[in-house]
Length: 293
Image (cartoon, rainbow, N blue to C red; front, top):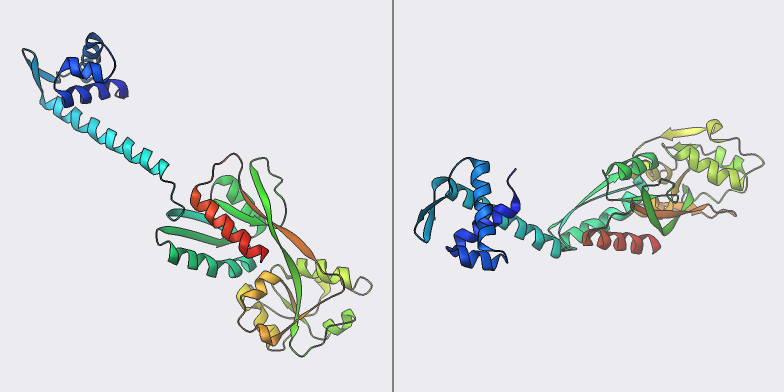
């Protein structure tokens, strides 16, 4: 690999056209500059300069090396400029969160990309283990989880909270006993059993049998469609409030208020010791504002 210092000396010499002026610009002695040129010639095995008294011109090998040196200078300059110009409205960013949060956040992210056309946001709806593994592996820049990070390579801040909601058909009264729900039947989904144990187990402790014994009315794994069956009177279900916010038929639902609500904190995570680019800070601020509202 070519020595960068020697290459810079050669480019400077060709640009000035004079050993003494080049040495002065490089803040070195003329013999030292001559040594750099000799070392390059030895490494390449070809003469780089055709000398005529005190003047010189590059040989064909020297012209090729000069072109390479100028390209490297231009690349370094472009790199330095990109590092100085950390544009919050440009570049890619990868985000992961639950499906319910994706429904809530995606319209805000689309609006942000419309306002900043050079910003490219990739949002993946994923289960909690996938979010954590993806952050550690570098697949995601930001991730939203339901618990504080316990991995040594992750860090984060609490960015809001979400609450589990009992969704009933609009005209169905809030249940006083678990039997009132059992007659409706449970609209199941992948996270439904865990949500049911968390919310129903807390509010109907005496007669709640556990999620594995619920009478299921139907099931679906597309979170945006889960409330539809409830709105049509086919049963009840449980979703985070964020998963209900994006449903167009919210007026056809009864979001029943139970005596003992179940809320959980939301955490915005990223790799520890990583300096986030300005675009990540901007998106993190938008996410926090959305979740806290």
